[in-house]
Image (cartoon, rainbow, N blue to C red):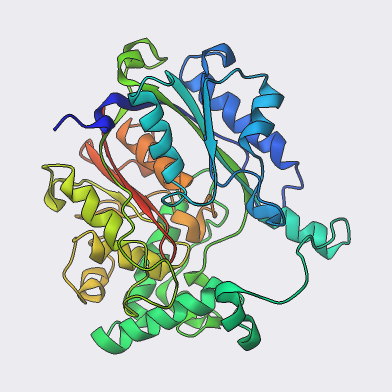
Length: 396
């Protein structure tokens, strides 16, 4: 069929500084990443006619929300024909899909997309009294009314329950799950911007303090300060961009076929993944054997495991055996996983980091961590536990 995915390309990508407690204004990080992406595409601010972000300005969200679309439009003096943002999208990468559709339908030629986080600095400012908690009081409602009374304020608590059930059903061991974290750290050692690069063994992983059984410290992603930006352009402009070529899109997965609730679905797997995974494969003739690498969302290691299975790279309950020893997911293995270190070591770039790494690899610009044998395809995902999204990308 004539797919909108084929009308869009990633013409430019940019990153700000990345680190723990950079103590920089999040808008400054956003501007750095955005200007870098525009320059990388060989464009100027006058060429940008669309802006899209996730989640936009969310009152009371603290460091989770660094800048909104209107904020950046004002600061960079952009004049977009279209803009979009919001929490209720198909995961963080849902904003990229929205930009692709804007380009495909002729609303825009070049859409600037960005995601900014500054949770590390925000928490530090709270601790030192420079920022006061902005949340409201009153009676809890929604899912939190069933969690806060039990001290289950963190997603680590909820995801640990799913992971425990999966282990009970299928015999997954912590040694097998730990291969994701160990592999990520090995890849992060070759990533200049990664937050944590020190070597980590499986023994280090197993001996780290528990956060919420069975998840330990190294199963959890690393809050950081950063902004990542892309320019999503119409394919007809690719020959005119700085490189003269651009990463393409083969298929997207945005479907949400499960209950959005954290506790009303299949208790063995995180919700928000299966629908996106199934939709992705329904929109392409490519199969799992055709994929050269995967950049899978790992807010927690178990997220990445769920994506592996739901995308069909191993059978139901077989992820433990697939991960055993770590050879299959290594950078030179049959399915390289999270080649920049993922969120467990490179930093919590909240979905956008996976798309950035996929593009860098497909362009052959990853340096020491470049996947061998000239990769031509990659999958990047976001979400898990809340509506997710998946992108299948192709090399220029």
